[in-house]
Length: 65
Image (cartoon, rainbow, N blue to C red; front, top):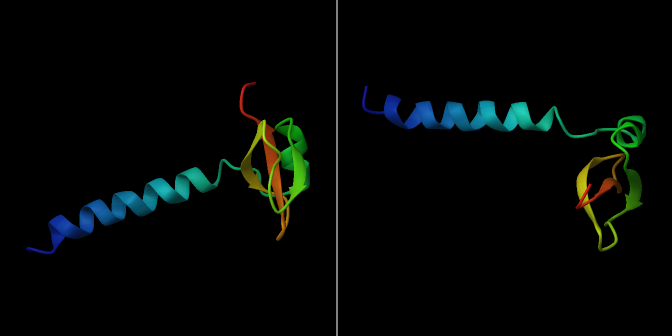
């Protein structure tokens, strides 16, 4: 019974991580729908990584808007 209080936060953390990963674009089509573009290995300055297009290409989107 003592371990249950440790397992419950771990379960919540895993559920939170799984829910958030479904929101990020996971292919080129979804990236384009999110008004982003696929950049190789990193995104230039005014853009941030919001998902993955493929193994080495990441979905980049502007920080502001």
